[in-house]
Image (cartoon, rainbow, N blue to C red; front, side):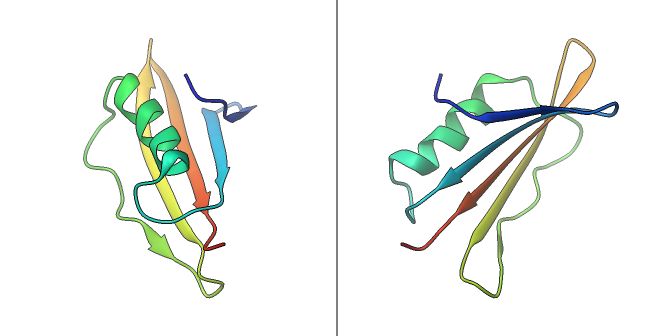
Length: 78
């Protein structure tokens, strides 16, 4: 699996990727690979958000063995 930066909190396991490309490039597939590999959480994933700096923020919520897993990515436009 592609590498993520992992953080453990009392509420969830958080995996984050900093990506430097747009569209469906190799970096974007890092996020998608993790989201597809983990069991789906409750409800749909939030839509991507474009911030004021042109960075697209991705988020997916999954659950693995009862533990919430939050996947995030920042896709930079350069």
